[in-house]
Image (tube, rainbow, N blue to C red; front, side):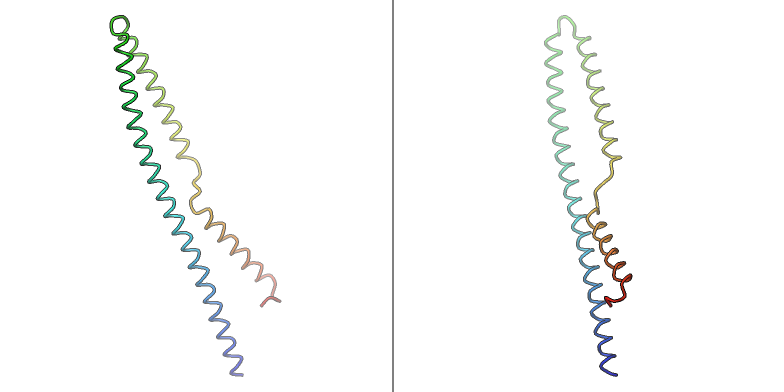
Length: 132
């Protein structure tokens, strides 16, 4: 009879060890996904700011060039047309940014898939008592 008690305790310890290992693995996966997403967002922000800076300088210089080319004849018309074009592109960028912000994020998708697979495996083992 003491052997059965030891076997049961060993089985419970193995079960707890397995559950702790599974939880630890899933938490590590979540932490990795958070780190990857943070790095990706940081890189995107850095590149976006650099792109805005360089495009801003380029657009400013191009605008000055076009206004200087038409200085004698149509400087007001050229300035108005370029202003409308820049506002239109700005509006387009705001619309693209809004659609990007509303898109579903893939954050934690791998972890959620792993949890679903774990739930399926646990559900399958509870359905079939012959495996115990």
